[in-house]
Amino acid sequence: MRLSGKCRGALPRRFSVGLVGVVLAGSLGVAWAIHAPQRASAAQQPVRVDVERSQPSGRSELVVGVTHTQNSVDSWGDADAVQRGRQLLAGLGGLHNQHIYGWGARNPNPQPGTYDWRSLDRRVEAQRTLGGQQVITLCCAPDWMTPKGTHSSDYPNVPPTPGNYGEFAALAARIARRYPHVKHYAVWNEFKGFWDRAANNWDYRAYTDLYNHVWRALKDVDPSIQVGGPYLVIEGTGSRRMGKIGYASAEPLTRRNKQALRHWLEHKLGADFLAVDRKTVAGSHDRNRYTPAQYFELTRWFGSVSRSLRAETTLPIWYMEDYFVNAGGGAFQAAGLASMLAEHVRSGVAVSLRWGPQGQAGARPSPNKQSLFSDTRYSDGGRPYPAYLAYWAVQRHFGRGTLLYGTTSSSPLVDALASRTHVLLVNRSPSAVEVRVQGRRELVELAGYGVALVDGRSRIQPAFSRR
Image (cartoon, rainbow, N blue to C red; front, top):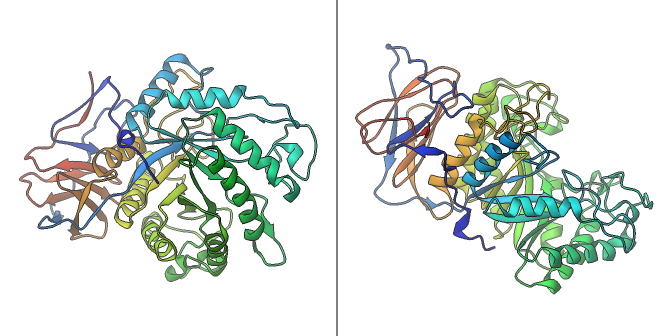
């Protein structure tokens, strides 16, 4: 897999970065203001974070990006809000992923021989102008290719019939020729519609057959195109160790996940990356109740899962979707996502795509569904949520090629990730803490669920301010 250095983000021109560090406090507003965090109790001993800088412990492979969904900085939104959102995305850099049918794009092939590229063209062009690199997810299939078999555009969300695998592959090839600058393709999404009831598992044989049709068609168009699959949902929260019950609490990788993965690895014609999808807790399947502290503890499984995947294959690991939890507010989500990204960096993950970077006004329980900025359909939209700053910090200071150094923390509630010049700190508790980072004279004050990026200088200053 080849990803260029253009994926590294730079802040939008209207924002400046201070020379010393950035504090992403739990009370961070959506106007890039840095508010002073609540001070820790004077009786509380500071958490100590040491960095072993005698030699690197590894090198980051991570590039972060986004998957654009139903509403995403579209031209029909509020003009100023859309512009703000686009500035944020351009500042993040990285990858921009778009599905071909659904999630903001209409049916590109409503009947045999008839094509309607208008919505997909708009999305691809809008994302091209944001910089970075583009990804196309080949999902879903036009209605006429599916068991529905009609010349409609009802988005059936099921795969083509086996007799139409060749037609779907031909559509993929036509898309690749239409957008020759797009060099990365994921085949299908979450095994949608591929289920073997008798085996109680994904129909990985049928999926692999479809994948091979598409792989061959794309490589015939351009051998340099990078193709990946199987976009497998990694099940099992790993919470059985906490005393939770049910199959959803199993430790990943589960037996049936391994069956699906190993079949695809053995029978694929080729692949350039391994595409997977994982949630900290899949609420639709896991009926257990968790405390905020337990949610944070479960983020450790991202690293464990990635190492287990690495034992199965040497392909670069792409998290097409990865989630913390939607509840808890922006600071809570940002801290959880920062912990998840730190696990990705430490375990050698190649790509992490934030699903739905734009929030949804009026959504419940919150318009912020682990999103990066507010809804650009409204005049106050395009404002960064706290998670944006966490993603920007990881992309800019811990992105692909960055040398990593080992860290130790005196508290399990403070996570730390270190490069040669910066340390990312994550407070995994609701209480404010003070942190003494090795080599710094001043303490770092972290609000509850605060995230901080600091360098080796002697003072901490807000890094994000309006010009």
